[in-house]
Length: 455
Image 1: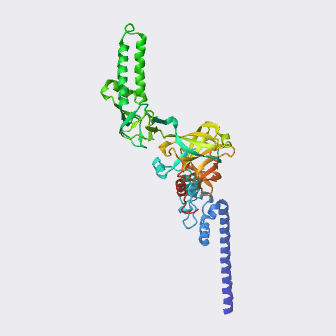
Image 2: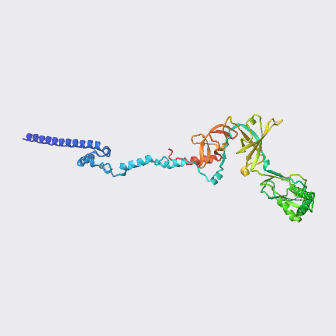
Image 3: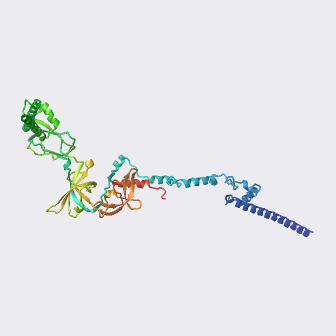
């Protein structure tokens, strides 16, 4: 009896087990069908819950079977963990962000480290105020259209510009009564330099006053009262005495004042004829200077001449009106060839070349030695000092060009280097290149391009 009961219990257990197994199998099959349907209709929703509890997913999918798959949207799909509402899984927001990022310009795109702003800054030239440029010692020179060579160089000497130099040498014996300036002083036109006097000065002034008065009297007389020869004689005598005063370096205003104030006879002030600097000052108080002796020389140093001796081979490429470069110390200035002697010195067998240059700020002076670089179209290039060249981030040579945007670095080719000067190629004629202070600009450039992330 017990055995029969055990058999019956086993049969019931097996039946129950089989029924349970069949139910599970049917449930799993239905779940698999729902899963495949969801995978076909909603591919993105099928993978939304990857990596989570699959038992919960099966229950969710069973619940989804009661809802029409056509009414389920991507915006409301949930993987059972609330991810459908989380910001990290907001697919619509991600799509919008990707579209905005795709349409963003390279200048404003950001990689999450703020590099977008750095890229925008690096694309601009360095901006400096006039005060900053002065403090940094930045000097800019305009490149000549001529091509130069380091081989076509000659030793030269700076001299005064004879077209802007005045020698003061009264053509009458004078005595130095008073000094008003010192050697090397800059003066303005009309500024008193010396007070001159003496017997010869007083006599010349007196003779002019008398001659001028006589000519004024004769000029008022009618033609019938005075002969033409007498009229002419009076006029010539007055002009002669006036020319004597002008030879003493008296001005027209001083001569006019002398006529109305005869009591000032015996002295006058020697005035500066031009703006310039006092040079060759030989006057001493109380000294009597013979007629024709130079008392002072006034020179306008804003322009200077350069005298150079060149070989016949070097002078082959020299033509009046062409450009040249003059190097004085650490300064390089553009100049213009204004003359050549066309005659060789009997001793040195060289020809003299005369060059004119501007000297703004009076930074160089007459008497200094210089180097003159002559045009040479064979080798081709521009001559720049060492101070104009720096190394770029890739190790190549670069110079800084100034334009309306500021200072920008330009890579160049250094063909030859010699005595602190460089033959450079790769720059357009007429460019404004920094010849001094380039190291400061290179430092600023490195700072603006520095990346704290080392990317």
